[in-house]
Length: 461
RNA sequence: GCGGCCUUAGCUCAGUUGGCAGAGCGUCGGCUUGUGGUGCCGAAUGUCACGGGUUCGAGCCCCGUAGGUCGCCCCA
Image 1 (cartoon, rainbow, N blue to C red):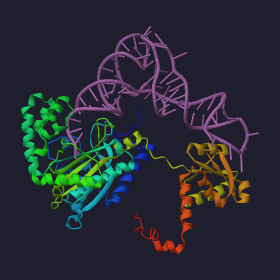
Image 2 (cartoon, rainbow, N blue to C red):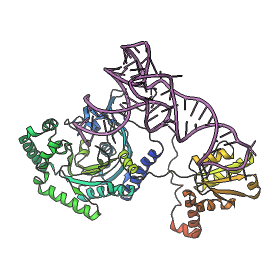
Image 3 (tube, rainbow, N blue to C red):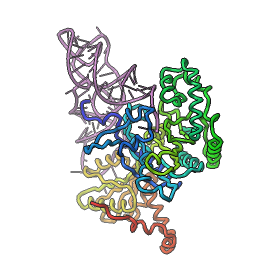
Image 4 (tube, rainbow, N blue to C red):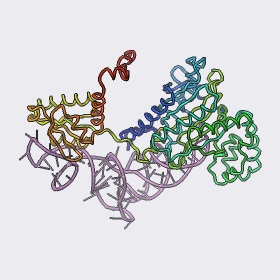
């Protein structure tokens, strides 16, 4: 079609796709809050150096896959390809390394990578993630993983994913291991795929997760990091596993998990699934003890993960766990202006009490009923001249096709009793709760009094 | 950056050796303006992705481009 389309690798989130997306973010935010994380929002673009530092030149990442450009002032700007670097930069920029560590951060938002799109991989995509900044203890690693696991449980997709963990050791362990690995693969050089022969020069660790069948046979007998761990690194890894058991998080050890960048150390983990084609990692992370220093801060050992919202959404869809849209109440005036005015009063009353309600803007009763059906209304409140005269309304259950006339004061109760309008049930439960307690009891509980006063400063214009 | 497959109505798709572009769903309207979801009648909607070529004639054959999709590379 020769009309405007979304730019390559971008997509619109509409309807049930948007509901899944939002459900992922809201669930993650709720669970992260339970674990004591606070939410940060850092800029969507940063000075290119925020992302290029620490990346090194071992891969195509900087040259090929970042959205970088010069702004009008001649500065090199990059759309964030991930958010860990931005969070670390913000920690340093705001002077938060000086005290109050560890700091526990949750984030959610769009990221950008200049890649060829494929299943579960886009140029603009969205991630959620958490970071514990300034915590050298293995308990932090385990808690971070437990939080991610609980989010997947809450979403209902945990049965389709498996946690795989590994350790990259400390610097001394890595150097020893890398040397052993290069020696081993060099001895098998001729049997390796062409891709892996190139990796041997550029990034030998990546041979470990090659998809080539020949390579996999050679990899199966390759040395593992575990033969080269220092005493301290081995103890750290053992502690992480012990804490994971304490949190009740099931895991599988996978010695082939690697990380390309130098600032990673110790714990590396991925939640993987076989339900997303070639993009099997749903949530991935690990410990990075050098990144805050790259941003100009003091040594600040940290651990975190990021997860792709689109991939989690695909799992929700596959598991048929798309959240339903709320079913509204359709308010239907029958007659002229007096009926419409009465219907608007009814709308206000319903919405004030938290009931999702709509009115059609035009059409006769039949059209409005058709529209009520189309928008998925569970019930209709019909108000005509007969009803107005008696302060009544007709409450119709649109699923069952039954209806009754009730007093205006009883409309919410009648709607709740249809059982098909969730928000009306909630409103009725709130009524019952309110009437269960005397007012001074509620004051004593000090529950919700200060919501309104704490709204913060007014919006700037 | 590389490769396989795909592109016809808003959606899902049919379209015979090359001979007037179709169906279902959806949308809109009507079937006495106080009752929908299920009935009946009717209507609108196309640069057959784009550009070139072959042919009397191309949705169909050939070449190129773009986009989609699934992989490879890469994966912070």
